Image (cartoon, rainbow, N blue to C red):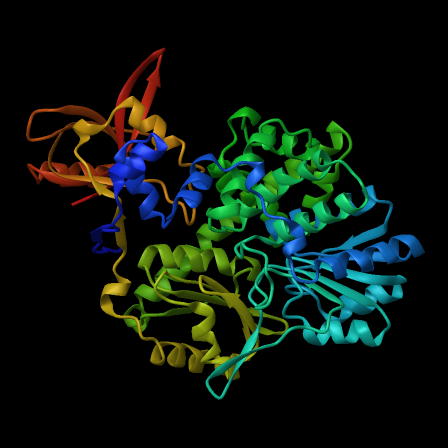
Length: 574
């Protein structure tokens, strides 16, 4: 295990915490946590604490929404064929499902196509456009893709088809004399909040949420009760978590309300997938979506076809749903085994070469399944806390995926090397590239040469919300903390810290020896139960050699056999 020095910092954002506490009837600690998440101003604090369906924004604020609705209504009236072209990940699958069910509800002649990850690559390509034309399609409707498909949309237009793009990715641009020139595709309507002149107030939606907003507007125009369009919020919430969007603003409302619906879902496919993974629907939370159910959907697009996941969502009987859910679970188990093998090979390559001196890792795994490159890059990023690319060999040349750290905008850095790629795209935290084999070593050298990361950027930063003594913890405080959820990217679980703690009675559990239970004692003799998840033997060894420790922690109430007691979960130690 590589040794990483952590840089602990305490958030020092200022506000009148006592006043906020009084105004909103919350503990000043909670007020500080809210401020640390950059929620400022009474209206925003109110939305953060009490946001519900009333806080959702109006779909009509999207640029081109009216234009898109007019085109759809014309196609409906003329009974023209509409083809939805989605993507093969969670967001693309959920986007496709929402549009398919929504358009069928208003009587559209609609079908779908989801690109094959290996054969087609991401998003629209010319063969998909021509295939749609040959099938008699009059309108292509994209979801979770299309904003970067100018060439392919030009082909569609030349063939006489219309195109509506619904997407959430960054608009491509090129630098012209120091200024960014944005490159929009020639679609008939573009529904994407990232457009410069789009007045939709929240820019951070996932692709499925954008697709859902289109259906909300369409249903409203057709006089369909809002309860029907609101039923899609569980799928938008699933995609928001699965696509790792920031849980801020409207996204937080979507996920909070969507989880309520997911706990009562009637979707036979989702219920079967929950059963397959021993999840009780009433207990589903962000963790289950991000780390259990979501990967099963993604596995279909990685190792088989995402149409299998879509078929599960569309299943009309329990038998079909159960079979498809079982297939997805099995695919995900295969994916996990292949990922572990690839990660071990990547770390071995780094450790046995001068690559470990690089600030940006570029690892070539020619035999790796190209669909797993992104996951393995993410594992490398976690292991070394460095931006990481994993490159694989395909019949069309080399393809790679990258995963970044907070202080490194991956897409912007790739723009500095764009002449080396046959294709690239992405955003600050993740990217995809295609390049010729002869450019691989050049890419590794150049991406490191243009890198401006300082050594401190490569130290994992642990941001502590508050240095708070364990004696301040109470059930009431924990109850108020829980109201700040759902937690995830952009709305991290609160992290507290205290130094000068004594740790005693460490006991190790788990077949992988990955759980340590103990007691922590402050300098006043205040005692609290604690648990640590991770390399428990390493933790116990550290405890033995230190009489006092600084710990970061998250407070919980541990319920066991009808009894409740306060407990802290230890996250970091030094």
